[in-house]
Image (tube, rainbow, N blue to C red; front, side):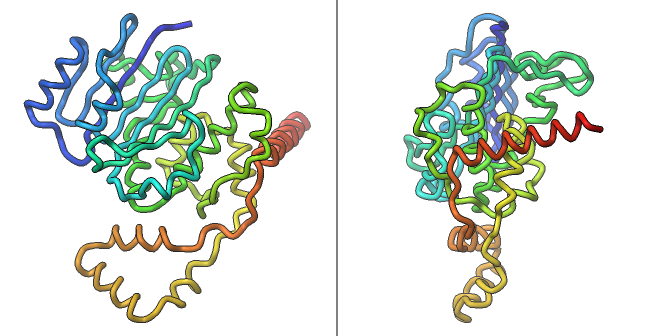
Length: 302
């Protein structure tokens, strides 16, 4: 098993100044540091910094992969977008975690997938190092992550979460649930009776960043298809029509004042959730297994 480790930090909202770059460069003699990116690759040894602390102070996103099959993405968001109360229903042990930063200004999300048997291949057929092509190698630069995507695609979900779209959180929760099939000791036996969190609308029409996140976290496509199949979202048009006229006028005025993203976030936050009944973890996993077997039988018959 490889001991390789890959660390990447991204500054998305604001580039680091010269002093800040010097501070993070002092944490590693081998890191490649620019105003917007920190990358480091280890074949032996490890990063000496405190990853959550580095993210909270300097960066907006962090990705990590290693030879043991660990994949991790951490995102730093404004503390009220979407806010800790909105994400708490999707938290699951240490695989989907969240906390308010020590400064109180940010919400940090930590999404982890672990699978020691995974050794993906790059799009050109060469083996990825740690699930991540080594920075500077021919054909792959920094920002290449497991599955052939890019870190910018995976971290694109940060903007979606900040706008109130909770699909990335549901995908992370679902990927964590799917890990139970790979590791029966991942959760307690009665976990199969737990109900799923609120289901955001649009699971059957994911964005490119959401698809990249699902692949990075090893979300089983059959499990995703089952989760999306029962979607019966509350219709937005009648809900908008029922809003008081003075409230709609106030919302339109905010849009004209340049607060379009804030208005969208507020509307998504207060729009009724998916009206379908909550399903249990056991139901989702069993249904995904049945769908997988049916697909395999159909493929074998062709």
